[in-house]
Length: 421
Image (cartoon, rainbow, N blue to C red; front, side, top):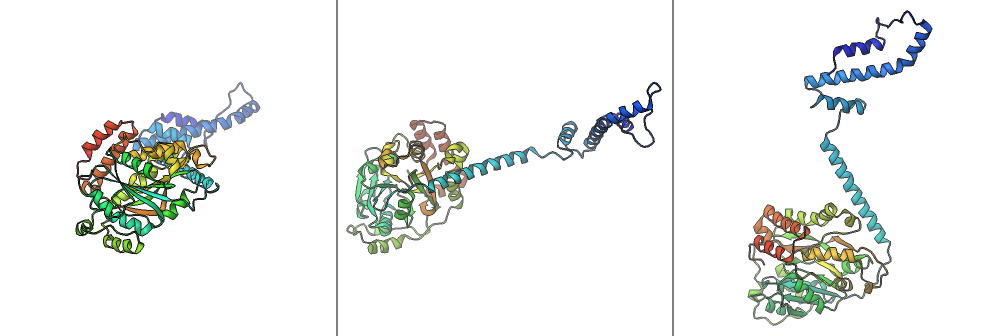
């Protein structure tokens, strides 16, 4: 705070009423007038500055000027007398501006893809690959739904068992799977690689065995989405549901039946018995949808601008067979996060030369918001929202930070302490 004499001097030099300065006796009045006219503007500015400092010091003393009188006065002077904005508001504005830039840039990238020449995918066949382990309670119901929805669109449905100790293989055969294979190595990555090697379709669909409601228009959506040359992989919007109130007992009650025929009417009637849905796990569904876009936006914004989204197995991942073969499939050494790893490698590799697209660059991995699938949240329902989110976040961060397959397996075994493995 300045001394009051400084303020009085400022008012005196500014020419306050009744206190005009007198010229020295050695200086003529004309010369004195010219000197005063040259310095008038400077004196007025000095007086205004001193007065502003005095006022801000008084407000700081009475508690009206915020914390720190000196810092407040400087900011008031620099902003022309306006009060300073909180630092939190500035950070929020910067973050929202950055988010807007990323979203607009991604939209511009999508517009560029929309103008690309499309591929002719009308005759492309679809192979659905389902890894399973101890899934006797749901594998047959899923197969019935798939045949009811997609026959004869789907060329083949391949179930790859990872060494189940229950009747998963028998139930898959009764459900009418085109092929039921047994992988010598347990793990979804190794099982899906075995299924992809045996598949003959142009489009590969990787679907978990606990999928309760596949997308009804999957063949049409995939042919339209993968007709875009730069698109390497797509996934669906996933709804996560808890266990239904009434337990399904289709495999136990029909254990003595003969294999069903692949007719839409018979499968449609059988699938209607399993349409009772469990409660929607809203928090985990929201978390699943957000992390697909939010993780790349935060951790890899450049990839996000190039059309990269982080897909997971519950979202029914789909790709062209040639693109999958070009990156050598899933990494079998990963017990978990094999789906996110494949997304990154396919984005970096881009469309394969075997597709005949003539494009070299990063591929597009994105989520189809208009196509919805439903999956079982049996494990997440038992864990709860907080613990389930923490487990998924902990494993994802360990993988992102470079954890090896053995480290991920140890962490997976430690955290996944339930029967659904």
